[in-house]
Structure formats: structure tokens, C-alpha cells
Length: 436
Figure (cartoon, rainbow, N blue to C red):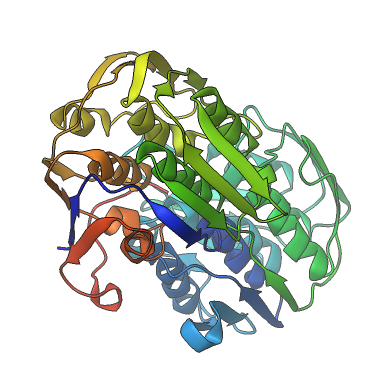
């Protein structure tokens, strides 16, 4: 099993490029189910979750070409034949986003069988809101042998009010609605850039959508969609992670091929911590740490608030700030699994329910630590970059799920980081359930 070995102490200097967003790419790949024509997606990140999605689509009969290098991170998907509209347990158990095929499958084929996702490392993530919405659209739902089965001759437009904001629920029902008969209104919808990116692809495929990016989305169903070419958004979480990497190491880093507007909440908190942030044009940000880091409090919220996917990384940062910071997690009930590992490295953190109190500045020392989930892994990489000595990070398949060759990118700007184990293409899927 692969490990990272990181020796801390080097400021990060230079330019680092952001890859495409895996949380945009996954629903966009699922959207290809909605048409018999080819869908081409560009700026696809080379991460484990994309390979898992490819396996899922091919298991249902789709043809998926996935290329990097000269292919410029592009995938072409043809779902002309869907011989088995089933998302099997073996695939769903390793990636919660696999449930996103439920809506497009029932909309296109009239039937979908999706393995019920279990809990994951950061907490339960049920698909009850997906199912409730499909029932409102006329689908008949049955449960058998750990699978949910949805059937509908043709879905009907409906007025759906989400009980709580759900990104995957919004995406799943948005895909279902584009082929439904009549108008569908999604209220209390998620506003994340990933939802907007999906809507842009669906519109390019012929869907009629208004209001994506707001809390109310209106969809006029159409009879058929066609193929399209679409470029995936840059990964805002990767961009935010690299900004914190520059700040925590006292570096001078230019983060390119990103969208500063998508991480405005992160940028404002970094400024509050005393970090200098300069936006360079439309797609680049320069980060410099000048003097001592200051404390700041965060409370994770749905977009455009501070993202839960940046909570762990921010916590690593404020271990190096003078004073006390409060970190409140409002989205997931078990997203402090990185805390015990940071404490092993010397951090002073106390947890009370959904709030973590971080007292800094504490010198961090190298240790052997365990990566419990995707974003926790990123926080441990950040901590190791400033720790005294050589840290060993185990179970890094978690970070490979969402960060493209992170060790190569960081090494390119001065980090002392190396991978021990097989090359990326030879890695095996873990047998345990992990978080999205």
C-alpha cells in the first residue's frame, strides 16, 4: 500500500496548476447516460474516483475512452447501449457519488437499480432525498437485497422542495428532470459551482434549465438530448488546499488555472489570518505569508459559505497561528477524524461536539499518521510540510481519490515529498467504504 514520506521545513515557491474538479466531473460523466450520442468531457482529473466512475459506466454497457497526456485529460463516453442499468455494490461501496446514476438511468431507460450506499468515514450520507424526489416525479421505488430499484414509464415534472440542501440530491434530480414530462421546480437547491457546471453540460446537450446556481432551479423537460463537448470546472478544493500550503509554509506561491470566485470564502479567511492574497487575472491567485499567522474562526456552510471540504486543511493552518481558533463543522457529523493525527504531530486541539478549539502556535513534529478520508489526508500533508523531521503518511489511496499527482505538484514548488509504493496506474481499489 502506497505511503508518502514528507520532510518539513521548505517554503513553497513557484507556480502550481489546479486540475479539473472531480466533484464536477463525476456528475457530468453520469449525465452522459441521458443520451445515445457521444459526450466529450475535457479537463478530467487523473484521480481514482474518475477511474471508478469509468468502471461503473462500462459495467452498465457504456463505452468510455479515458485518456491523459496527449489526450489532454479528456474522456469520450457513449451510452448508446445500456445493457445493465445497475450500479453494483462492488463499485458503489468505494465511492458515494456512484448513486448519481439513479436519476439519469430511470429518466433514460425507465429502470434503475442502485446499491444502497452505506456510511462512510466522515458520516452517513443517505440518498433518501433522491428517492423522495423521484417518487414525486412518479417513479415506483422498491428495495431488495441491498438495492433500491426505481421504475417509471416516463417521469413527470414536479415541484420538489428539499428538506435540506443536498448537492448530490440536486444533481441527481436535475438530471432526472431534463427528460421528464413537463416542468420540474427544485427549491432549496444546492448552489455549488459543481451544480452549475452540470447544468451547463446539460444545457449544451439540449436541456432547458433556468436558475442553476440559485436556490430555485426550473427545468422544462424535453423528449431527447444530444451529444455535447464540455470543459470541466477547475477544482476549487484543490485550489484552496494549495493556497493554504503556500500560507502554512511561509511561501510565495502562484496557483493557476483556478476560479477565484469559487473560493471567495476561503480567500477571505486566509486574509483574516494575515495571509496576503492577490488575484492575478481571471484564473490565478498569488499567496504569500508575511509575518505571523493570526487566528480565525470558521463555520462550515453550504456554498457560498466556507466549504466543509476545506475544514481539515484550515485546521492544519491555524495550528500555526498565534492564539485560539474555533472550527465548527455543520455539514457532516464525523469530520474531525484528522484531529487525532494532528494531535500526534503536536497540535493542541480539543473537540466538543461539532466544534474544535485549536490553540496555537504549536511546533509540529514528524510522525507516522493515518489518512482516514480524502480531505483529512490533505490536512496531514499540510501539517507534514511544516513539521520538524520526516513524516510517513499511510493509506494515501484516500488522497489519490481527489488530488491528481499531488506529490509531483508539491515537489515542483519545493516540497520534500516522495511516494513509496506502486505507480498510480497499478494501485488497487481499497476494499473498505470511503468518503466522497
